[in-house]
Amino acid sequence: MKNFAKLLSLLVLVFAASAVGAQHMAAKGKKMKGKATPTVIKLDQVEGEYTTTQLNLVPGDYIFEVTNTEVDKDLGFYLQDKDGAQVENSGLANLIGKGQTSRTGVVTLTEGSFQYSCPLNPTPHYAVNVGTPKTIKLTQKEGVYNEGNLELAAGYYVFEVTNKKVAKDLGFYLQDETGAQVQNSGLKELVGKGETNTTGLVFLTPGNYQYSCPLNPTPHYSVTVK
Image 1 (cartoon, helix red, strand yellow):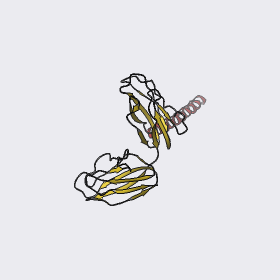
Image 2: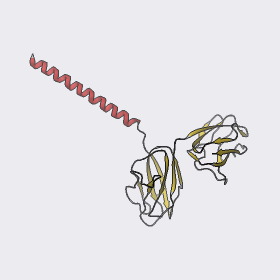
Image 3: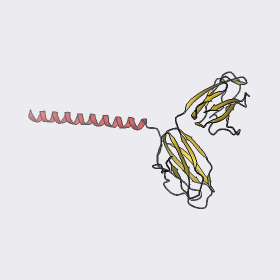
């Protein structure tokens, strides 16, 4: 009887340990499942420069993939924070010869300003703006945007454009003071009647801008950023 009691106690302990282990594995699996996969940012280098000259990103985890497309020597990648310190895990796994590609580790970027370069090329220092955007919703009908002129604070934005009633595909064109299109401000896809789409992450500094839709076409509406 004593042996049976001991066996029963042992079985209870084994079951309890198994239950705790299962809960731990489930919690760990849930945590891993909830963690987003790092976004891969692809960059190409040519003689003395990167072909991508600015990045606007949301806070998160990234892997930078750098390709040496034409330079006859080994190149690298240098990502620094606002204080000039190299960002953790941002070095390439290997230097890259002509035609080669390498990646950084997983880089966690928080809100703020960074810059990237290659001292071995050497290249200019290019801005990496990291921030959480506000969404500006705009609607188009025949020949006009409903919202008119905009006044915004400097910062990060995503423009969401809806085609209310126009029976053709429409777009969105945001220009700076020189008339150049603002980086990342194009819609991901044109919007047909009843459809909505968004721009990429747009970083607006103080100044005067204007938006329109050449496909509608609409007037040019002012965007004053302070």
